[in-house]
Amino acid sequence: MTNFMSRNDLLLLLGFTAVVLTMPIWLTPFGAGYPDLLQRFMIFGIFAVGFNILFGLAGYLSFGHAAFFGVGSYAAVWSFKLLTLDAIPAMIFAVLISGLFALVIGFLSLRRSGIYFSILTLAFAQMSYNLAYSVLTPITNGETGLQLTLNDPRVLDAAIGQTYVGQPVPTLLGQQLGGYAGFYFCAGFLILSFFFAQRVAGSPFGMMLKSIKSNQTRMQFTGFNTRPYALSAFVISGMYAGLAGALLAVTDPLAGAERMQWTASGEVVLMTILGGVGTLVGPVIGAWIIKYFENILSALNDNILTQFWSFLPEGFAEIVVKVTSKFVGDGWHLTLGLVFVIIVIFLPGGIMEGVRRIAAAARRSGPPGAKSHQHQPAE
Image 1 (cartoon, rainbow, N blue to C red):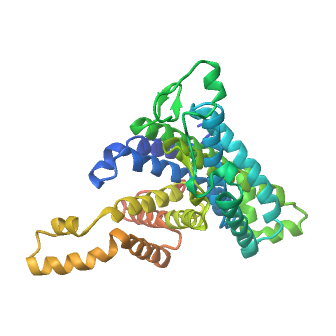
Image 2: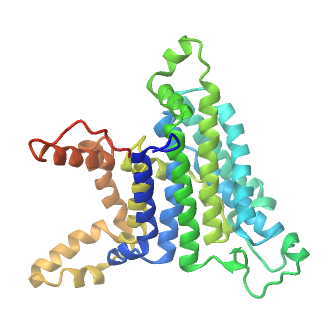
């Protein structure tokens, strides 16, 4: 292969692309093949990939990344209201605004490291949430959220004589981004985001971030200034979050302060740890698992469980339904918690560590004469 991309990286990218584009097919048997959930898989996959650049590569744990996610949503909706319903300008606007916001927050937060950095990012995120919820209501519309209306100016659409009937919805070159069209639009951005993260991880810049994570103090003692690299990673990660927030506004043209809550920041941390910190595919898998639990397990009720366990003897089936009902519906967080505990205890490196162990076991059980010095595949 050329110096641009190694053979392993190219195979990983092609495999990832194939998996993403065929999701409506292979997720249908699991009840997750409908567009709305697929779009969320893509959006939160982007969010997790970007967060992993800061946490997984540079080793900085941010508890406030939902602030950039919310800013991206607000920026995209304002673009829809003021400029045009076309999604591309909204995406650009959201990424730029989120990047500028991340530059300010990162410049201040990176004056500290470790837990102090994490607490600073959490504090800034909560301040952003409270500002959006109450103080900046002329911009954010407070608890009601920012929505599209027919009376919005949309100067670029008005300049070309574009008019709308009914509820305005985002478009791409005049085509509405609903259903599977919206999924493939988000999927394209996830694949591009994954490719960019792949290039960052394998670049000299990515090597510097890994060195910062490994031993930042030693690098500073040698006279190397690590702060510009950490700040760059913070800004890139914030732009990823803004892109994810903008895509959520594209698929659901509403921006609310709840997207900036600390729980949303904690969720992306769980996604990354569950899948595998520092890996490329792991955070995406973690995001998919959590969103699957949130949307599928939470929808299960006693009637569905009764039908599912109907093959058991009647008395025993009632007991099983009563027990399993505690882990679904409103109790789906219990299932997620158990999965997370099991992963942390037995696979500290996340799901991708389990994949590596299975791959290593398969190589060991191969033919006796097989060579065992192949390069470890990228994650």
